[in-house]
Image 1 (tube, one colour):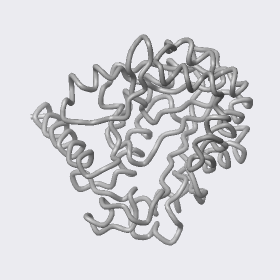
Image 2 (cartoon, rainbow, N blue to C red):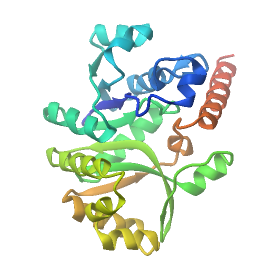
Image 3 (cartoon, rainbow, N blue to C red):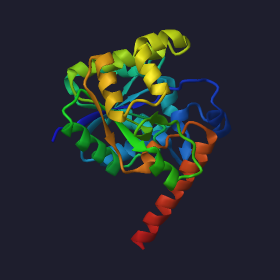
Image 4 (cartoon, one colour):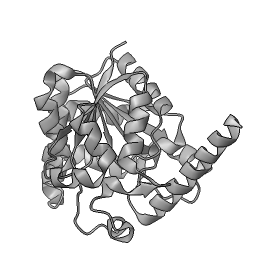
Length: 270
């Protein structure tokens, strides 16, 4: 089975992040969860995953790396590669994919995916490779997330046959997959111009989504057509895969989950 190289997006989108200010840290990737920076928890999970061969960290700023000595050591030792991040996540992905076109397949995730585990990573990578597509995204049924974590509020993709949450897991499997990153970048560049963004996505597609007339399968077919890239999804059975740290309430929830997880691990050893 092919192993994945992983891009971990670790650049800050904003200089005015309430979590960063509250924790007194220089960037979001260094946010501590039960005493360990989120980005290190993500790298721990990826290092233990069977289907991962190497990691590329995109951001944070190079000047900040010495402030997280363990990350700095991983980069200086060559265990992890560092690439300067671009202005947006999509631009960063597009840039790194083009730099490392010969190192596909690539898995993209984020530094705030603090609940990522080797099991989640391996499940997604294994299933993504079976689909024969260019690009694959991870989703979790919204009902699974609500049943397990009723206190959380996630962004929901609402379709005719169900509601789904993104997992910040994306597999770029073929050279043609770079077109999807280019399309994502074009959409992100127009995020402050809704009418232009709708034009990129296609008026009919947006209307069908708003009115919830599309099933997941139909949405994927239309997205594939718009991007000229074959896309599919992996439905993950792990509700925690849909929880990243976007706000202080997420931080508190993730901290609680990690503490419980690590306490249970300690008990099992005893």
